[in-house]
Image (tube, rainbow, N blue to C red; front, side, top):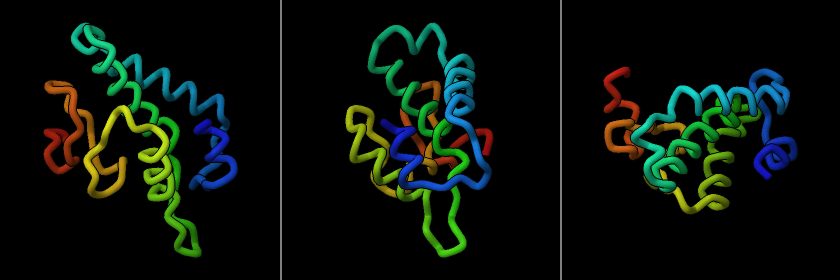
Length: 113
């Protein structure tokens, strides 16, 4: 569903094959899944959503005509996938997944920022 929406509605800064997006998703999941977040399905789903957003949407851009494909993707994602909620301000790309509490927080609060 997401890959089809992206083909129809979005443009990337560089061309990326769908298979590469899936591979990035799997690599991100491999790096983010740990013993703690597999204890409950809700925790695992939050990790999956974070990885999916970044694996599928990280190459989206603002077009020369001003179209913000990241913002479009963010609005579409929030409308389509409602079980895992991002904070309502900004876009889904403005948040990182804090592994200590398994919630989304602003990148400015990340110890890596």
